[in-house]
Length: 499
Image 1 (tube, helix red, strand yellow):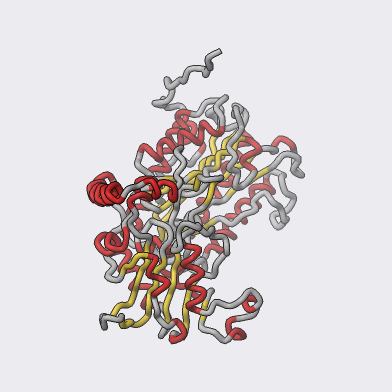
Image 2: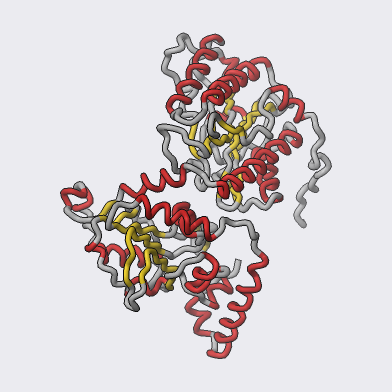
């Protein structure tokens, strides 16, 4: 890792060398576009999404969106940047330090031209691009993303639209967790501060009272409802990416079923999944991978994945999803490390499978997540009572502590309406049973945790099982685990440092 001191490096540059850098970076920026995948969402998709939002906005209003902040990992190293899903959905822009305004009605610029949207983005910068990667800049945003009004973010401070003239200024309230980069007067921190001045953002004391009491035009809650309505129902273009993410994730589960051996570590198993994701050109994981063997599977969002050796007596719960072109799958399989379910493991597994299949049969337009959740809980409770793990089907317990459904898309827990499923919504059904050590039941069940999670699309009259490619039944899982793996002969040498 090379330390980048921007101020010092700028001082070292002569005017001629800086000009050379500018020309070089501009040229290589254009040339390097061929190095990128070509199947991202189209600029027409993002433009149409902005238009759909505009139609939903209240009269005489403006919606304001900010890019995600850069997150610091430690010292001078940042996490890999991930754009705010709303911002990406509406723009296709994947860089930080940007702000988007979408107006309900046409506005008139100083040159008398009319516009109904405007975006401010980080500028081209030869030195920064040499160190941290290509930038589109204002002209690139116009050329590649289809905006007619695009400016460098340094222009936002000068932007003199009168926000007080609108009946509503809609935006998501701020978490106040954005760092200020002293070397950049137009970073996200400054864009937010400039916006607060422009709209007369309330003081800390004023924020404790309602908008009606504050008597201003700022609406920090209404925008999310519009975005849920939009993002919950997927377009054909989005469904193509979701299907690809799901298939990649299914293949990861299959390859692990074939490769799994007692003695592997949880982290090694995670690595096989994520290698398959990368092999199929998935950019990332949609969320931190969960690989929990034995009692670790009872931790719902277990992400340490540190267990050095998994035992042949254990089940291993694997909840992972590839992110492909911004869209994530979410698939969980629970399999026996030995390759064969014990009688007790199978008994618990089949209850969960039956609960999922009961919900699958009911999932169609008009049904709510709450109804599907109730169906799975009824099946789970009956199964647990029949095994003597609980005494009554109405007993309150924590063996199934979560809901069974959520939307998937640009977020693993995507935005969408939960009260009634609609055609082309994509979502999960994921019942589970978790019996931690020292539970109030026969110790034979302790340490068994099972979750089965699959991805679905609502059709006109029912649903499409997107992730059926990954084995789900105990028979299919056991059969898959008997298949040879390409990794069977992949043995690394023992690490022996020089003495």
